[in-house]
Image (cartoon, rainbow, N blue to C red):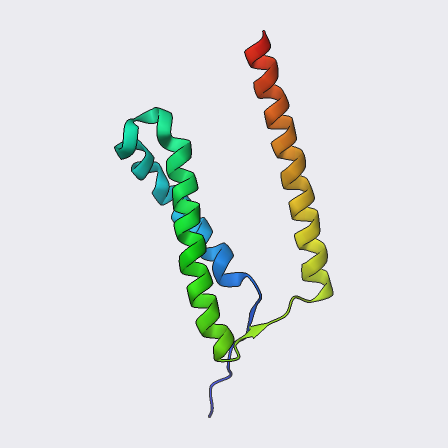
Length: 101
């Protein structure tokens, strides 16, 4: 019986590897300069994950195993980005208020 070829949606590997590598950046930040650099380490981990995920996704795209997003997936992605921006803005506002007071 032939195996069914799995198709992954666009951005699958990029998101997966960014999520895997972001927490791995915490020890990198601690190594760089202590607790003050944890954020920089996480950013470095995300960028490493982005590079790895993009390379893996490019290989799968060449093999024809990447499909475009469905309408429902596009809708969920837009909602997630909107919620993320709102959370970021609230966090920035709280940080500014804490610095002012």
